[in-house]
Amino acid sequence: VHLNPRSLIDLLRKNAQCCWIPHQFIVIDEMMMPFEGQWKYRQHVKGKPHNTGLKFYVIADHCYYVFDFWLYEGEESE
Image (cartoon, rainbow, N blue to C red; front, top):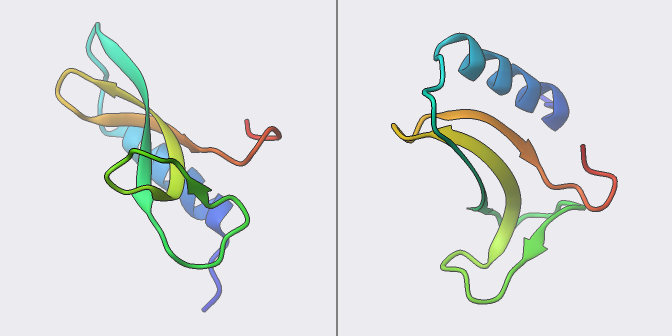
């Protein structure tokens, strides 16, 4: 079975947004998801606990619910 990562990410984003209404205060931050496989956009950031992986930008509220996220894909990233 071959999965398209873009369609999987879009499906996860839609499900997260329909299940929760964010509170008044939100945070935009980056997170690294550990990943050692072959991927064009794999990042290496020194000083992080998981220094090699996929970099995501995340919008979350004070309850730590991830309301929206997007994968960093170089300078062409959304």
